[in-house]
Length: 67
Image (cartoon, rainbow, N blue to C red; front, side, top):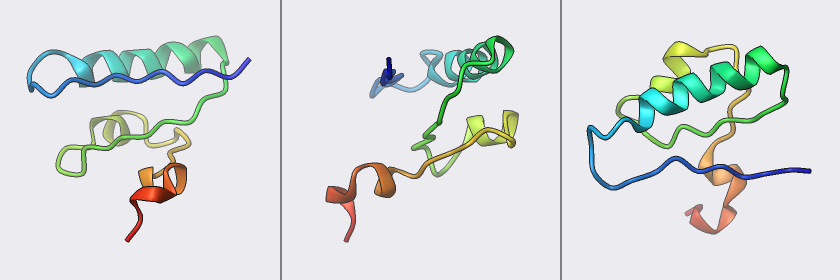
C-alpha cells in the first residue's frame, strides 16, 4: 500500500524538519522504500542530512504548479 505522509505547518520552529529528518532515517533503517520532497528552498534540511535519499521536486509531483 502506498501512503502520502505530509509534515507541514505554517509556523516556524515547531519541529517539522527535526521530525522529517528522523522519520526519513527510520524509513531507511527499516528498509522502507520512500521518496522525499523538501519544499523549503531556503533551508533544505532533508537534503543536508540525507543526500543519498531519492528526492522528487514539487513540480514533477504536482504539475499544476508549473509555470
